[in-house]
Length: 238
Image 1 (tube, rainbow, N blue to C red):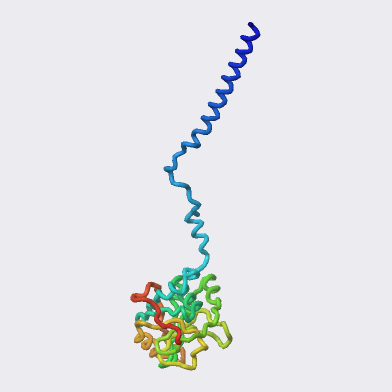
Image 2 (image 1 turned 45 degrees about the vertical axis):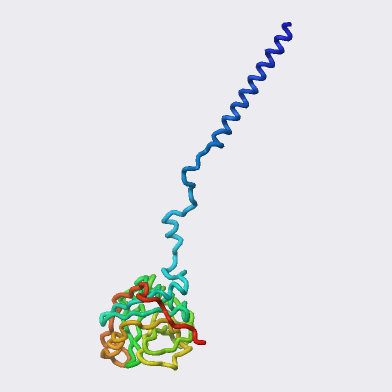
């Protein structure tokens, strides 16, 4: 009898130990089954500083042709304001270059250093600012690929100036006061004056020694903003 009682006692102890272990395992699982999802999940967002560090280029480096076509640039000169619409369908690299130079204020303080009577005014040469920072000196020498295109060089058209060699355009541009078919398919026409052609004429008429104005008109500020009505309307001829 003592042996039987001992066996029963051992079995009871084993049952109690097994029950306790099962209860402990159930308790450890239960919280996982009842986790509330009310709190928003953490997103893998970069910090504002990290996002800013990602942007190492200029404002319009990654802008589409369609978006660039919606931008207009106003040249605030000491002779008056000239508004220019962009034609990126014809010359996307030239437009991007021009918008970046205007948006980063690189053009501010430059001069219209060359005029040819009743033909063009030329500006945008960063060296005419006077003092250049190392960054602007580097920027002044960045070349833009040639983009001869279907835009006709007519009165009011804005085109990139360059040297005799290919792909030598940098920052200088010219605005036409008369038609110049001999420039078609040779220079990158990229914009068109929509307001202020009379200001272009006024700058063109300033006293000059040959093609060098005695007191050049100054470009105080170039401002990039959405065009008042639509964007560029020139399309590829059929």
